[in-house]
Amino acid sequence: MSLTKSRELDRCWIRYTSLVCLVLTGMISMMTAGCSKAERGGPKSESQAATSPIAVFWHYPGFPGPDQPVRAGLLAAAWQDGRVVRLETHDDLGRKYVTGMLGAEDTQRLRTLVAQDVAFLTEHKAPLVPEDSAFERIYVSDIGKSARASFEASLAPPPLIADLRAIMTTAPLADMKEAPAQWEHLRALCGSP
Image 1 (spheres, rainbow, N blue to C red):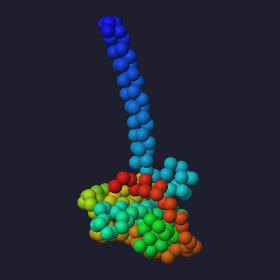
Image 2 (image 1 turned 135 degrees about the vertical axis):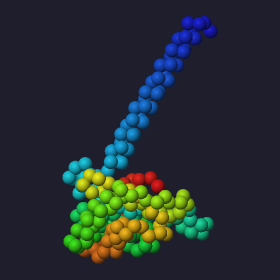
Image 3 (image 1 turned 60 degrees about the vertical axis):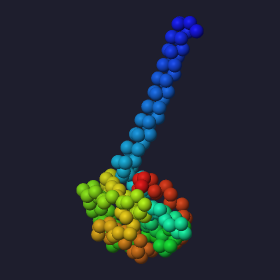
Image 4 (image 1 turned 90 degrees about the vertical axis):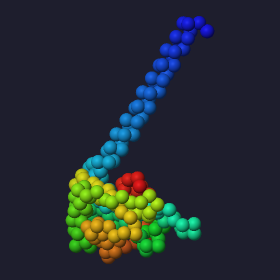
């Protein structure tokens, strides 16, 4: 092969690899830009504020024993207007949900706890969860600020978070009805385990 042909091939290879690097850099920047917007959290508009939950509890399974079922899924989600989706019973994780409206007093308490939890989780780091443990992940959002944390499922979370979880999972609901089991899209709010 002649020297000029070799140089020409080298130039083509350099152009090709430069183009590939440029495309990959562009793709990574777009993915990173999307992630950073999601990480900032909080609704971006009034219509999104009405459709985005202000609190989500998600259960991750850890590593169950050989004869134990894998249990993962939404525990409860709540919206600004007091609407709640939660498990029908604790045994229905990922299968049976109900939806309804909290009373006015519980809705106000929910909003207050969410604001307090955002401040608490922003200031305090949650303890690390052992890799093989089942854990719950919480997401809370208040006035454009959001926070996430994980808590080992077998341990009690901090009182503010336990109070929020109790309202979302046990407070009486008006107009309660069965809800579909497709809530996987809410897991993204809680972030990766």
